[in-house]
Length: 171
Figure 1 (spheres, rainbow, N blue to C red):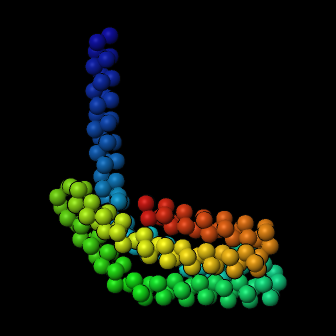
Figure 2 (figure 1 turned 60 degrees about the vertical axis):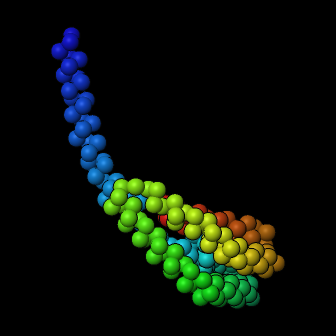
Figure 3 (figure 1 turned 90 degrees about the vertical axis):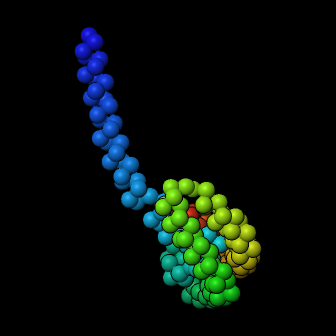
């Protein structure tokens, strides 16, 4: 009876030792540090493809289509302006993030990232607030153009795109 327990224990330990090390190696290869950091998406600077939106909302009237394209082009132009205005800040943030990631990897210490977290908390909210203002204006203008059903689809589409961007950043 004791030999069966010993054999089971040895097999279990060897199993976890072998597969645990391969799982650890896989997470180190494709883990957090290999992801692309995109401060524009974190700040909420997201542009919309008019053709995809029209297809998603199943809009058939040409006058409605033209108005939606115009509204989305205006919105995208405002997002481009935000990018131009804040490009230096966002690029510096991206460089600082990359630098601190490399230091954290070398030192095997995540405390280095607290500096970047503080920078994010300081820099991103004002930019996000500007982007949210433009988004509210877009939503109001589209609400007057779209039917109630189409507007619900639009809001759902917008929310899904934002969530999808956030999920991609976390992968």
